[in-house]
Image (cartoon, rainbow, N blue to C red):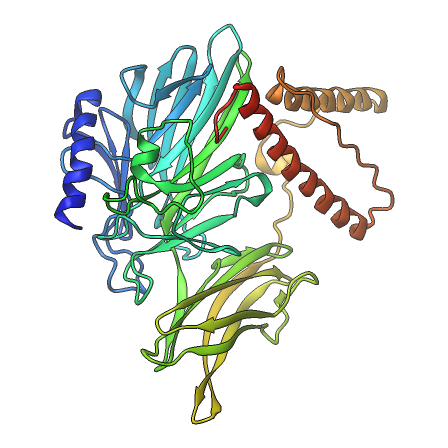
Length: 496
């Protein structure tokens, strides 16, 4: 890292020390892959590798989140209460329980107004590695008061990959992101990944956004860290603007996840969460190409998962033309390419040292261990003709049969209440009404939303897929309309 960049960030973290009265005390979780440290005074966290990925001998003792010695981290979370910003751990609220470790997790409980926020940081298995090399960051946001509150949450991650504080992000299906970018609603990707270097990376990280059991964020923003740091909630983006605060400032990339403002009645709570850690890949290199494949290490039958491929033209002189990437299924039938997916992806032209990025949606079809292959080929013009060049790489995945649902007696849970058909029907109607009311209140009182009703007969899956696609399109349009209206009448900012 350059001396200018170091001083640039030092000035801001120096200010943080006064705001948070930062000290040296911290709570630490550590294993042979990573370590996460939570500052005792601020509740902020930093993430580093220890041994890193066993398949990579260059990522030991590296940072994945930015930190300065003796200061809390530069990643922080905003709790937006009734249109005012409260930074978790700041003196605008009070800790009811400072960071402490219990059962392998680090907890911290902080309260502002009537909103109590429990931060939980734990180490979990990485989705693409199967190793305990990823942190799960959770915020349980609860209204412990007697009146309704409008509450939103933002998680800011100040990424640092080794020595690179301005590493670009990669989004499956989008490619490299090197300038201000906002994803909302159905456009939010399941995950993103980053390398410290585009060529021969020595540190690889991954952030997981869409997770089973958790409410996904409403907005994902990739931008400059200082811009985000100085704007705890309302963030004015400039599409195409590089990850720089000004023309003369260094490149400094970061990510923010937003859970939009919602009505939180007395006693209600919601959870905001994300994961961040190492990105597991398979790779191969030849004289002409370098190929990196990313994908989950395991899946369940019926799952549809994403496989990514990054291919680099290593030639210093030759431009590769008509480059294509091919997904080759294992012959044993564990995997399937869905009907709406293509096994061949067009990459096109690759200039010297240029990297092309493609992705596939793949379905897990039956239990077992499978090895799939990605093959990339292209051509270079030589002596009036063309010469074919190609590269192969393989990656393994384990497919599990779907676990059977346990009965209440097997889990030790109390037996379920037995209801008459009339009572069961009445309860179902009440639950649907409460669900609809909650959705309406989320956007009310400013908007009245159209209702979407579906009556699927005979479970025609083609019709189901069609209606899901139509609903996603309507949702995206609705989100755009909501944002324009909110901005027009001044009740909300650019990102919420």
